[in-house]
Image (tube, rainbow, N blue to C red; front, side, top):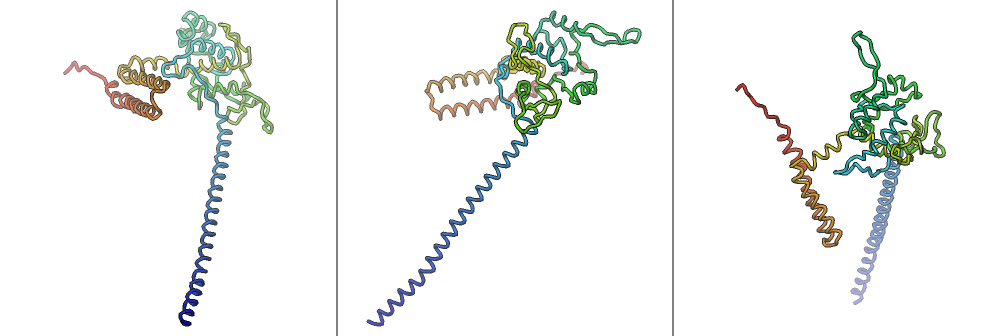
Length: 339
């Protein structure tokens, strides 16, 4: 009996001694896991903060290099079936003639381009006759001046680039024929630039001869603010506010960069049998789908299915337009009368 009791006491003692290190190791392992998790959390936090700071640095550097991102404006001619506002084009040409033409050229635009767009043929001929064009040589081999005609380009404000830089303190006024296509975010950028002049913020120094404009790369531009309320007097009586003049001159410059836009839309949508075959049902289906969604007949899941199906149909139409039918549309038929 005594030996059995001693044997049980020894076994209990050994079990206590064996469970002690296990308990301590479990506590240590738990503490190690908690420390590892804390280190991982701190590492993730550091990565997030460094990424945010690097993104902010890149954004500020991009803003300094390319200027402040211009807002997106709802231009009326940007829709699929929308056309230019021709009254705005006429007013914009007036703004260009009276405000911009003294420094900026439009070497790719002729007076005849304005016929039927902003002016009648008689008005355009009278406008062209107001300028003098150097022509020749004549029969005697000499150059002469004559009144302008419809085929003449818009007059150049300077004879060469050196004269332009000398008159503008070293800055070269760009040609405006394609300015809305040559600048990032074209129309929005030009409008924001023309109407974005303001006083420089605290700590920003602008040297003499330059003007602060956050939309211009670097923020300092040689061109002063040109659009002020009442700077021109519109023929149709429209109030010549700064925003109105900016909108009109941008519409004119947009037309100058893409004079064929309206014709291109007419050819590609209603007059093309291939596209009309696909786009007419698509447009009708989009309208019907929108009406049904507004009435609440279809649930959200069914609406997404319709949009997905219509998107596939649109991609199919673009595929056939660009790849399958381009060969047939661009082929040439030659009649061999010899053989």
